[in-house]
Image 1 (tube, helix red, strand yellow):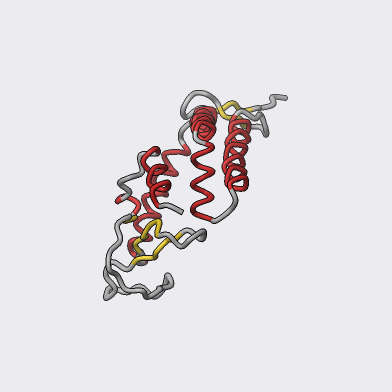
Image 2 (cartoon, helix red, strand yellow; image 1 turned 90 degrees about the horizontal axis):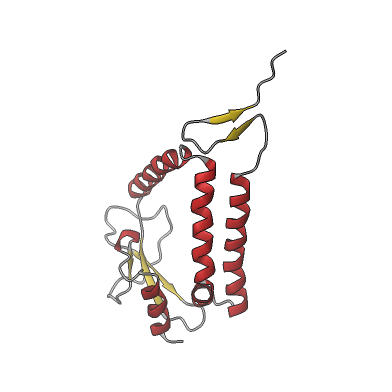
Length: 167
């Protein structure tokens, strides 16, 4: 397998520079030690996990190992983002998920190849994995408009439709 195909897929999805994700695509001289999540200490600087394709062991990426403090900082940022996501009305969130599903549909072949490269699955299984993501998006869009319970989502931010009986 050629690393060029992987690089072409990354380029199509504008994923050439993934420093925000702590991934380094350049081969560098590092220790071959493998660390578990609890083993990283302040003495281990820039420890990485090598990610290779199971097809032919070609190096795909190196992922920086985070310590507990870095992990907790990332979780904190994600929780803040979750709080912002929750205040977006459900139908608007559903629309964003629908758009995401459309992007998956447009890139199904390339994403299926990427799954194949990363997991070693045959192409049809890789395409099936992408189709599952598309189906989940469609399902989530439906849920965002579902009328259930006594309180339902509204199009207006900070507003809800509530069933109240007056006797």
